[in-house]
Length: 335
Image (cartoon, rainbow, N blue to C red; front, side, top):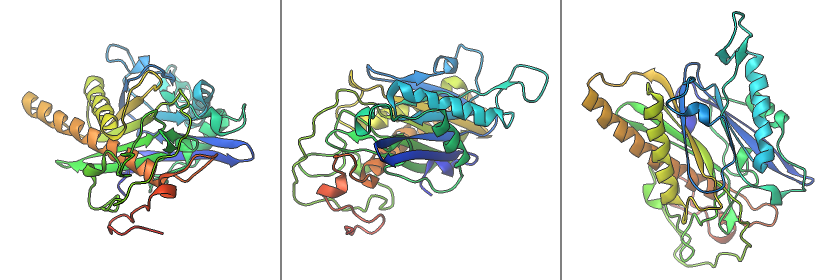
């Protein structure tokens, strides 16, 4: 599917509201039981929840879900709904003798999309709950959905994107809600900065041969790209962090500039543990390095998909409004 759900056991659910003063949403990545998690944050304006629990020196090593949301700091409330949905199913860190005595571990991050809708219209706990209810292991909708509904990247409409890759039998997938201060495309040509990472014609393989001026859209000054990278390997929290670091490298390839003082770029890493790592220490390190490199590639590709899939919204033009969007796998521009 070329998606984060290519990692077996990972589910994605999205919920959004568009119109009547709304332009925001929430994306939830549900993790298989026993998944290890970590996080890497860059930039000067993060909006996060439960990230300290993912530090290697702290007690809890498992995550039940990751919540990505619009709404700036208000949108962190969406994680309450994710916790409620998981608790109803007895999923979480056990703190008592009874099956229902659990505390779901739901790290979360938000992006700034408040200007897209009316003030006060932002995700709450119900957004998180409904996103969980919609979660599937199938193809992931891209563009103006979930956390990417009200996203903006540079001068263009941003969105939610995803991509996947296999490395020596392991599967690595990423999901990004692209809402960066920087541009994701070369303003002189319209070619995405990360276009060279294209796999099997997924972006269409052909780019505009004439320039089109990027619109003079005011910079918001408040942004943030957030996302998740997942792998089916059995990693420690420390090794998971290397995946998140690699994904941030992918963001830096796909957006210029990245990690600014006005971005709170945050990437979570999840390892499901389905496939063991090598017993030999050096073989393990070399494989981890390959997985981290793949995390960079898939996250950058997810960013490109988020931009190409977005549609104009709330006065923001989309990529497709300025340049023809190539049909994936054909190299032929679409309508």
